Length: 206
Image 1: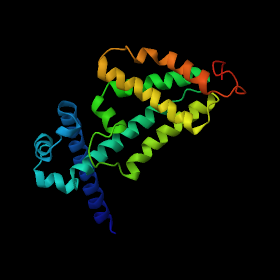
Image 2: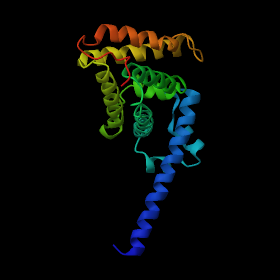
Image 3: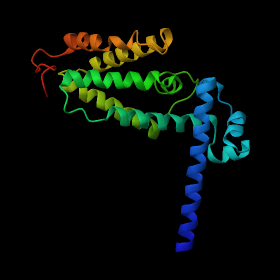
Image 4: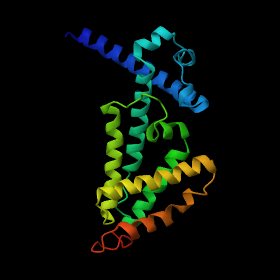
């Protein structure tokens, strides 16, 4: 490939990437206003400033758009949960990570529903998009391990407890903290039940 051809290819790829980003930004606006089920290709094209056929040139289907949105949101979540907390004691790091998780979920309900609830019939994220969510779960698994919790079923229990708090908060006290303020209590209760007695005290300085 010549330099001219390479430059043209790079320009086309940059333009495609920019167009996709513009469409995804518009898609997030729509779902935050109308809910995930309210996303329509015609309305999205209008908001993104393109024609509907042009929209299909960048995304094969509405599910393809949902997948790109899932990938974006999961990557944001992965980055947030991976923030360094090695300076905190294991128990404090677990509580801090859970509070970050709760803020991430409650500040953008549409994003939370896309990532953590199956609200779109027939939609499954692609392996590439889902990989970010897996990485975030690995971070949670590592935090539990620092607290002496390594049984896989206890990871399942923890995700049920933490998402349960978020569900209750969003459903019954939007904008408040009736359930999220219980995070410290839930962390202590969970560790008292699940931590191996032979493990070091998770409240001790790491």
